[in-house]
Image (cartoon, rainbow over all chains, first blue to last red; front, side):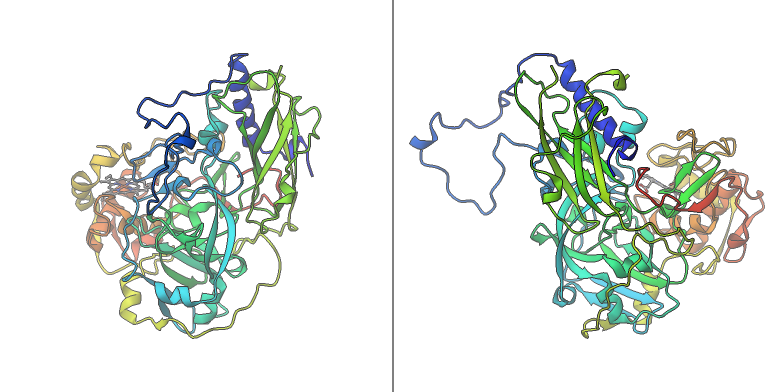
Length: 363
Length: 199
C-alpha cells in the first residue's frame, strides 16, 4: 500500500518545496527569531516576579501568533498555518475558512432548521431541540476541494505548508447524527438525495447522496468542546466526513429530501473536475490520500545535527495505517515514524494523522 | 527542478480503504455497508406550508421551483448595468466576481488548461442553474433582493450575451428548462474508485 505511485503529488510537492527551502538556506544557524519589538517585556527571571491574575479567557503567549491568511475577504479562502501546529487537532480559531458570501451572524434564539421534501413529517428544529437529541463527539478533518491547487499548478520553493495545503483542519465535532433527524421526519423510499442549504448570504446549496447522509454525517453544534464560531457555521453546520468541505454546509438552515440532485452552481459550474478529453467529473466528493511535511519547511534554517521530521497524512477513503518517510528522494522508503500515525486511531474517514519521524538533516 | 535535488523526502501512506464501489450516476458512496438505523425520539415541530414556501428556493433542471413571471434580454441588459457590472465587468469579463460572458472562449481543452474561463457559452450544463443561483446569491452585496421578473431578465441577458439564445428570448418557467446549453463537456460521475489519484 505504500510507495511512489500512491503518494499524493500534492503532498510530494509540498514536501519538496519545504525541503528546498531548508537547503537553500544553507548552513546558517537556525534563526531564533528575536521577538518583534512590539511584544511586551517579560521578566528576566519569572521565579522572582509574581505572575499575572486569571483572566476570563487565557490568551496565547505573546510570543506565539498563529494566524490564518489572507483575511478581510468575503468570498475566498483563508489558509490555516499548518507549520505552527503540533499533534492532530487544529486550534479552533485558526481553522481554515472558505466563504462564498461572508461570515453570517445568526441569533441562536431565532435559529431554526427546516427538514422537508420526501418525508412523512416535515419538521423544524430549534437549536435547543437539536441539543436535546442524543449526540456524539468525533474528530473529522475538513478539507477544501481545491486544497493544494496552488502548489500543484504553480510550485515555488517559497511556499510554506500554510499555502501548500492549509485548506485543511481537523477538529473534534459534537452533533446529532443526520440519520437521527431523518428518522424523526420519516424518510420516504423515493428519497435518494438531500439538498442541504446554508442560511448565509450565498444560501449555499449542495446535493448529498442519501447513503452518505445515513452513514456518518453530523449536524454539529460544537467543535473542540464549545459552540461553533460564526466563521465555522454558528450555531449549526453539517459535517460530511472525508468529503470535499464545500458540502459541509455552514449555518445550515434547510434540508430537503428529493429524488435527484439540484444541479446547483457549486456542483456543475464549480466543484467539478475538468479532465482531458472534455470530460468533467461531477459529484467527486471523496478527498483522496495526501500528506505533507510541515517541519522542516520553508523558511526554516537547519544546522547539522538532529532534527525531527513531522507532518500530516490524511485520507477520506479509510484509515491511515502506515506513514513512511524517505530521505533519498523516494528511492527507498522505510524510515518509520517514531510516534507513528497508526497509534492515533481516529474514526474511519475522520482522521488526520501526525507522522513524526526522525532523520539526519540534509548534509 | 525540484525533483533533481537529492533531498526530496517522501512520505508514503498506507490506506485501509473500504472496497471501492462502482460509481453510479445516482448516488456515489464511499462504503457499501448497511446504514445504522435510528428510532424517532419525538423532537421537532411540524413545519408549516408557509415556513417551507419561504425557504424552498431551489430550481431543478426540469424547471421545478421556477416562479411565475418573465424577463427579456433588454430588460436584463439594463439591470446588469445597474446591479452587476461593478463586480462582473462592463462586458461580463469578470472583476471581483467571475467572468460571466465568454462566447469566444475555447470550448474544448478544459482538462489541459485550467485557465480557460468556464461560462454559460462553454461549460454550464443547465440554464436553470443560473436562475437558481442569481436568485439566491446575487447581487452579492444585496442577495435576495431581485424580483422573479428581474431574475428572469438577468438570466435571459446572460444567456443571450453568451449566444446560447437569441436577442428576442423571453425567460420564464417554460422557456428556461427547454434551453439547450452549448456545453461541449460531458459531465461524468466520479470514476476514481481508488486512492491512486488525488482530489
